[in-house]
Image (cartoon, rainbow, N blue to C red):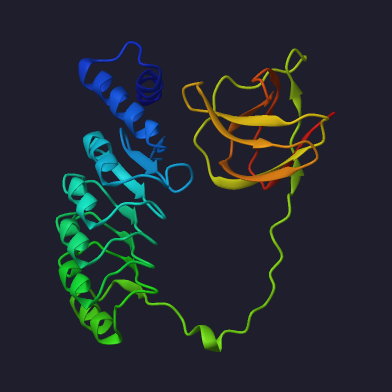
Length: 285
């Protein structure tokens, strides 16, 4: 039943009136560059992300997120939102995870979060908060992780909040002058994805399925520039980027995701289907 409702929500067919309204909300979020994903393990719960394609999001854009109601996780990292925009989040009673790192949020913005009683994770790294913000968080009894690196928060403020919330882990950051930098190799692809040419004997799934996070490295070995599209959970196509001939692109994705490759004029060329490991996807000549 849940699967049918999600598909109906994304395709806009056969829905009760209430869920049909949600389709317009999802469309508004996607128009602002947001990505709406089903939250694993909970019925009619959503994860909304703007940090990949929606970094131009401003305060008014959060009104659409507020209308979705059952958002469990919200990522606003590196967007253009300010403290004033957080007033739209007051009604998200199911919110558990909130990313606000490197935004213009300050102490006034944190005051809008005090009613989010189910919040477990809050990232305020690189924001303008001070100890006053921590005082306002002392009532969030379910808060388990809080990041305040590169803010105006002091050790005294952290100590005070930990007395109020002894089970809360507060990450204040590290002294960069004491760090010895060790060059770390990037994770290498562990498998090669099979190229499913359009018109070939093997057909890709009609849509992606929710899965675990991984990275695909697309290598364009063809003699032309190409585009890559994610085939979403309803079978729709979302443009994620272009790859020049001879170039490559590292792409965040999820297991069981379906990716379409087209030429520069959107003519379909072939597909890749993500597995469960970091992978290499070679676009052939």
